[in-house]
Image (cartoon, rainbow, N blue to C red; front, side, top):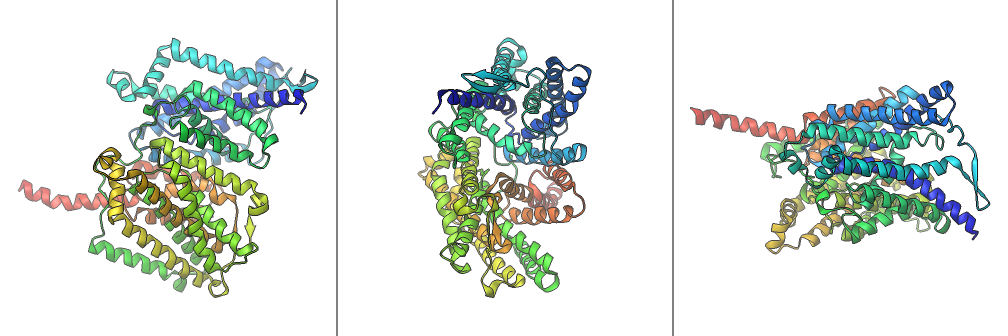
Length: 629
């Protein structure tokens, strides 16, 4: 291969790495100080691009010069930083003490709100930005032409790294950031104003994200999907480098940039897999990343003290649950075809959410990639029916949980060796590997076109008949999982969730129990995926993607993570809310995001958890009155 071509390819990788580092550095600084897994960081990046395509052309009209261009870029970054401050003051400041999962849910609400606001202000059409003056030409390198602006980007990354190093080591603010990254509680004990520190940190992190987005306008047009396209790569860089480590983010960005630049040449069919495979390998070999420390992974994924433990139904609650099931089963008798379809989807998503709650609420294992097993089940069922085997639906529905369970067993073998946020990030990596395989293995999965013609057997082709089939399988699986929760196996998982060290000290094999729980939850999600495939008649890679995984988490958290039936309430509420809001307005994401944030603030225990707490207070009131008398 021509050496000059290799040099140009390497330079292209360095340019991408520089841009990625700028974005990821803000994410890692925010996490290091606040411990918030800020899913909205991609939204700040997108806002930086949109604000830049608005400001920069106006400044260039006044003075067509590189100085005007980069001044507009810096102004865009500062404006995004101010937006970050507003988000911190209005929302994040209220949830610093809640578990990481609830923080993630709130930041996901911000993502939905920002996406619709962007569509409202700038419209759905992509907006191309101006090129930088005097940097529109190409520079000849070893006989090959390379864009001059890309060379500037290569220089900007080390420049930002140097400025951040000076900030961290030569200013009081930087020293406080480093101290908070190591021990946030100690910084507060020393009398540091944590509210001000967090606000300034969010300003810095959002500004870096905005700077990364503004610098992209000569390369890519601003569009409403930029946030999700970059946040995954930013998470990968942050996790590989070590959560909270800026030098680690720089090194990781260089590795990812070169891997993407040359991976497309060497392994063109698995380029998406390579990045997440590297992330998975790093986390398995070095659980805290290349430059991370174990302290950075500390954080609570479970609710705070005071939330009631899982308990069995009382007679009145059993009767209420039976009435709810009977009402659901009566939908085909009193509702139209559309209501039957919605009820079918609620049952399927309730099973998927319940399987995730089995991991999170019972086992304390947070999964950011649970949709992978949902998708594996869907693809297993769909490919068996439409492929050369032409298998019947009945066999496909048996294969769906088996295939998903095998996938969960394989991934879970490595996942259960980690803990905290790094365990969650490894689930994200494996989930994205599944997505990448489904997207790029076109010969088998159909790529982004997916697989069509996945229909039920003739006896179950009627909408009502298929509804009752879904109800029978979903409710049976939920009942079986619920029995496992109250079996000795379930109590072992809860003991390991509360204190893995104490559980191991009394002789429990924590890792094996968690691995089996991961396998069982994956199989249940796979059954839900198989049922969904036959309901929709088609499958595509979105069934394995991050947005669907987040939807499952939303259902679990909205319903109540520490209540057994909370995910069922959350699935019904979330799906019904989307179904009710989407037809009303094109800006349904805005209303849905506001509803999610309001739920986090008003019902941090979830809807079912709030009802449980209210019942507990009412039960305690007569005792209090009697004691006082």
